[in-house]
Every structure is written in C-alpha cells, then in structure tokens.
Image 1 (cartoon, helix red, strand yellow):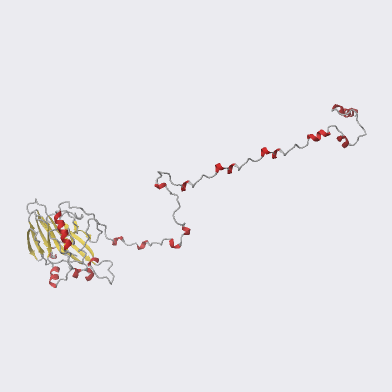
Image 2: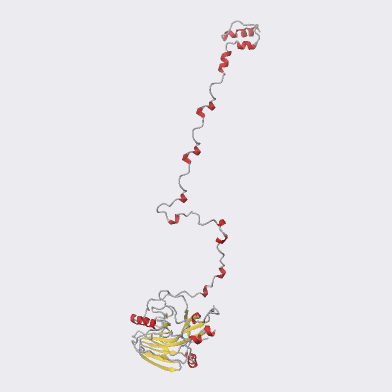
Length: 398
C-alpha cells in the first residue's frame, strides 16, 4: 500500500506539477480547473475555423452543365440525312427512297378516296377480240409490178368510188345460184378464153403478158339479197381455179395467177388484192393480199402447176347484233376468208383482224355492204381453168 501511495504522490513531480499535495482539496472539479493543462486541453479539441472539408470551395461542382448536357453532344445542325438533298452523282434509285408516300395515311383517307373493287369476272373474253395483225411485206419476194402502174391505179380509184349495191332481178340471181357465170376479159388480157361448160372456163395467155384482172359478169354476193343481217342466215361464196401450166409453153417466162374477189369498179390492169375493195391469194409467193399495194402477208405455200385451188368468203350473223333502232348494214357482219387446195381447206383468216397502221389500207368494200365479183388475175404466160359451178368443184360445202 505504501508503495503505491508514494508512486501516486510522486506523479506530479514527474510531470512537472507541484511537490506538495493538498489533502484538503477533495473537489475533483476544482482540481481540474486548477490543473495547469486544463486550458491547453480545451484549445486542442476545439473545431477548426471555417467550414468542414466537405463544404470547402475545392469540392464545389464545376461550372456549367454536366458533361451529358454540354454542347459537344448536341444534335448536328440541319435535317437528318434521309431528308437532305442527294449528293451530286447519286443514282436516281437512291434519291428520296425513304420519303413518305404522297397523301394521307390509309387510316385518314376519306371513304370516297378508296378505289372501288373491280370484279375480274366481268373482264371481256379475249376470244371475242379481233386476232392480232399479221406482219406484211414491203414487196413480193418473187415479182412486183412497176411503180407507174400502181400510181395510175391509185389515182383512178380516187376519182372512181365504189358502186352502191344493186338489187338483182330473178334471172340474174338464179344464174348466180346455179353457177352459170361468165368471165369478162379486159383489153390488157393477151390470150384466149373459151367456155368448157356452164360456169366453167379455160384460158390461156401469151408469154410476157402484162397484169390483167378477169371478173365475173355478175356478183357472187349481192349485198341487197345476201347480207346475213337481212336474211339471218350465213352466206358463202366460192369458186375454184386449176393451174394447167406456167411459162407460155417455154418455161422461161415469169408467170403468176391470183384468185379472189373485188368490188367494182376496179382498175383491171392490176392484180386482185392490190387495190381498194379487193382480196386475193397469189400463186407465185403464196401470200394473201387485202387492199394491199405492197408485198402481201405470209399465208400459204406457192401454188404449183397441176393443183386446183379455191377461195371463198363466209358472211355470218355477229355474236352481238345491233340495237333494234340501228340500220342494218353489211359492215356489222362477221366475215371470214378461206382457201382450199386440191379439195381440202388450206388456211383462212378473219377479215376484221387487227390491221397494220403503216401498210394496211383497211377492208373497205369487203365487209358485206358492197356487191362482190369473182376475180382472176394473170401475168406472163399461163394456162388455167376456172369453175363457178359447184358440180365441178373438188371441195364441197358441208
């Protein structure tokens, strides 16, 4: 005990305090206030001047907006790329390809703006439309007439319009029905023509004969009597020609024959099919000519010596007849042309097929509203036989 006491009493000397200890001082608080280090202790633990470090200026937020709001991140000026004008040289397919379509969106369209439903079941049958046009030629691949004859024929047709149809008498109409017809030879015809029997004729031309057209003395088709719009029945006209020889016997002469139909008047120094109101098939190139002053259209093979060929036209009632108050005309009839070779059909065409706007001259005079005559054209030396009588035909109507 004494050891600890002396240690306790010696403590102030060791720390620089007084060597005497006042036993009577029993108040701890008074001792602390009188302690030589009490003032220093209070000053040591006092708060430092100024704001705490977390509130000092060096920790204040930087001036200006935060980085995410600074100008360097602002959108570029001007419209977006899809709305800018294309750069020079940009292909047209890449320009404004993303532009919105014109007009309001579908949800904002007015009811009247919506296109009406198209019923595809009412589309007309294309089978009722005329067939497409056949391609014509500028000239024949075999033989061609001279230009002066063609120009003279064109001038002649311009000043000589087609004759109006006439009403035949009973004798004339009976002769046509029985095939009792004759051939009329023009002055250009250089040769001979003889009758073999009723409605059957044999002709011969000399070598180097010029173009000529032989016509039947009466029409095979009378528009006033035979139009299907008047009779309500189909009318067919037809005749045949046999080629006996070409070349005038020598075989060195260019020759050809054509068979067809013509409306009058017709320039008889021209082959049928070359001028207005006529059609024909030509033997040398096998082409068909319909009011065609050029080179015709491909149709069949050339006609050879010894073959019998025929040509016919059929006039029938149209699928859609005219209105009740319309005036019946032959132009509304359906007209087909057919060709036979040695008793069998060898092709045909629709007269009202689509025409070539450049070369075709139309089908005037051939639609059933004018009288039509049988026509045989010839040039060069040839021998031939013509039959209008059905008893002599190789092809028989069914």
